[in-house]
Amino acid sequence: MAQNNSTNVDAAFDMLIEEVEADIDFVNNQGARAFEARDYDRARDCLESVGRLTAFREKIDSLRREWQQIDPTPKEDDEDRTHRRDLGRLRRGLRTPEQSYYRPILRALIDMNGAASLHDVLDRVHEMMKGELKDVDFEPLASEPEMARWKNAAQWARNSMVKEGLLKSDSPRGTWEISDAGRRYLAET
Image (cartoon, rainbow, N blue to C red):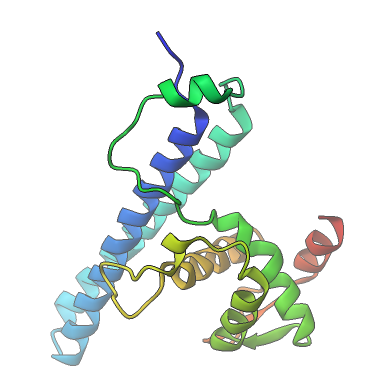
């Protein structure tokens, strides 16, 4: 039996995370509509659902990081690559991994005196990552057609960075702010 390449597992994690994020966006939109309609019970239900979905997404991301530490498969050669199992649903040019946004986000914040608005950070990150972002990163989200996939991924990276202590959690809404740990991380990597 041929072993599956760890790239397929990483791709499966990416797909799962993206689908959960789409559900989070959908429920967020439903909650916003309920709030606007003053249906506060429905808005509260949506908020609770988003909380559960976000916690689930974080578990998936934690499992992905654990998987990357294991990486049980040997590196493949060209012949193995042609015989590798095709999951069928995977698209060419999978999205840029979430952790790829860490350094550009931190660098952007350093360049902007340690804190900046979401839009300013994303503009700077886009400039820094132009050569790294893949075509699939520029596709719109199914749940939010006006948002490019890379922007959503960068915002999820920010969420993970807050949990890891690299960004401050008590910054004003819409402002991203680097922490001392984030400065150390940037200096060490």
